[in-house]
Figure 1: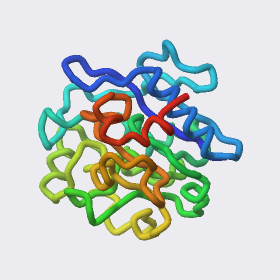
Figure 2 (figure 1 turned 180 degrees about the horizontal axis):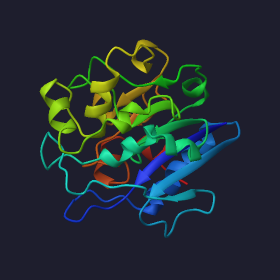
Figure 3 (figure 1 turned 30 degrees about the horizontal axis):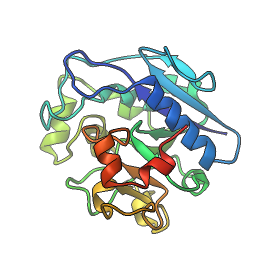
Figure 4 (figure 1 turned 90 degrees about the horizontal axis):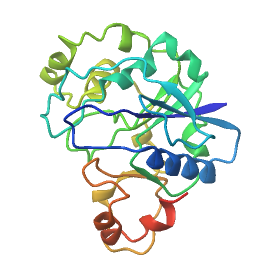
Length: 237
């Protein structure tokens, strides 16, 4: 059984805010597009308002003192590295990590039926060389060194100096470089960023399964929905 995992927490002074209602919509999209038994877990510091079908798990760690190496405009998501810890076995044997602000448009089963310990998302269109932190499949406990070797005082700078940007995705990209199982190598994966798609289209992009928005321009914003009208069909309970 796969466990879909998302993280929701608030860091004081950070403008990007994610709410329980956003998690509830994400759960509903997963349920519509994954037709096999699964769990849906939200790791959070505030479970109030979550749908009863969402398993709430307390935030196990946080790194509020850190900043994203790319600057304050970008979020600090280092706490999500805990997914690679041995303790994350409580989430189940296999997890699929998801950003809250993704729009799911088609069947998810092809993304989780892999035997590899880790399958990440890479794409030549990314502005930086990386394995994305918002969508990957992991067999829990299979890469514990990514968590065990993370040093808040040294690791962010080490990843950046090696050309890997972002917070959690910078460190995991640095540690997983050379790992071969990637969604970007499979043409039918259907993972894309919204700025790669055609504005004002009435239908979701052809071949899309997941369309990732930006934390600054999430799918619940009316301006984003006006620019991409198809979002309303999918971003709903």
